[in-house]
Length: 100
Image (cartoon, rainbow, N blue to C red; front, side, top):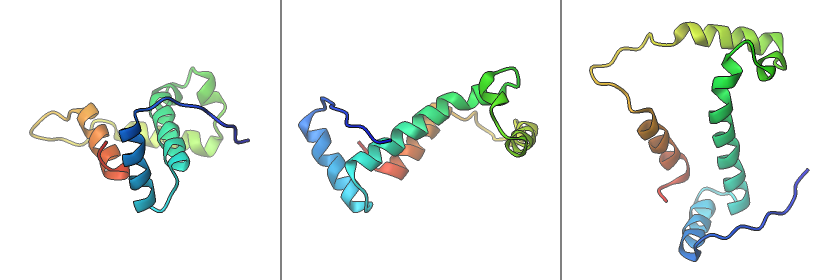
């Protein structure tokens, strides 16, 4: 169910975000909703991986199996330099939504 939300955001940010949304063929509302969904998922994902959580118990057996396989892949990629996860996340979001 959709509901209205009132936000206070700097005018310049709103104007730039509207342009980005239009360039991507979407609305500002849809863009913000997707950003929030991604943000929530990113912060809930570690909880879901822990088998002792309520979130994990709610998952279907098929999804649980996929998560087990993903956990087995953790740490198999090697790089010469450590990866800055926060930087990589913001880089991904900038590519997806454009720079803010």
